[in-house]
Length: 397
Image 1 (cartoon, rainbow, N blue to C red):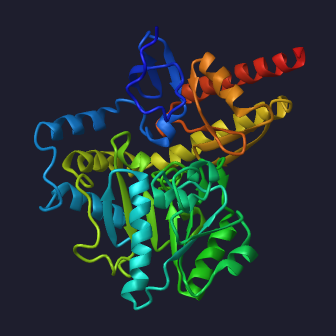
Image 2: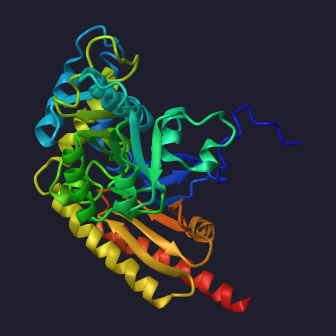
Image 3: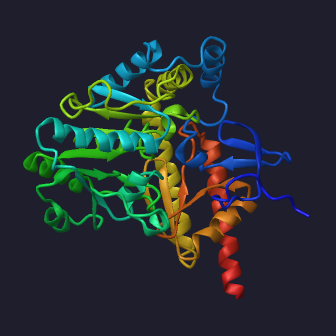
């Protein structure tokens, strides 16, 4: 008789458990080797067991784990300065996760208007297909019924409009609107990039209406699209930005970045965290930046992404009964399926390759930014094998 699990039954887990990994490869507890092109949902951006990250964490673990934000954390100040130097931001607040980074972003936007004498401006407009986290506020921001059901009244203060609909957005703005919140590339929603022209229009609209522009770059940031952050492709800047996932390369951490103006309401006592910005996370975060900000790294991501996207597009062209299109930017790619996306994910499991399902019947391809040409070649071979099998099975039916 199978023993009942002591865990909350909130995950539909695949029957695979992993023991160790190196680079783009991960080995399960039976010794089977898998190509990891899911990256723990865009988290393991530098692959598994990256030597610089491992050594940095080992060294810090032997020195100091935790002090709390009652005291100065030198590596926290250093990492914040490096992020400020590399982005639009003047201020950084460190968190443990993407949801916490979004909570901070939401609070920062509301507090900004409060400090300006307009407490009535607290509502935030979001977009259909969004995913911003699993807290009560962030599921309200995302607006997806499947995440809201059963958790009581939806948290007040979020208005949602259709994706890429400027007329609907303008109609939704009221005297209570504080900010717009958007992912430059929707991840969970199916790897849907927002048009660069639309991002520019959002910036202009916010400037015109006195609104704050918040970008959720939890999944699209830290080099994933070939620039440090996806919004850079549009040539505009937000007022506030939430970051997580790849910023720790697998170690839990996130950050809320803001301009000095946008953060001016965040004064002592109005926000805090016990673990955010702890010495272990800050050491690893600095090590991640050492790699991603190195000369030529982002250019290499762009080159790898071009090869991978072209290869996937060729497979789509040859199997229109299984696949519909390739979408996304950089190494944040999605394959929209004709067959159920879960069928492709399962067939890729059978081919020893890990990918991630998403909304809109899409399979996410989120390889390490450090993937080699050989990794990409093998990935394309395994995708084609899986798609060919699904195509043949469909014909047999």
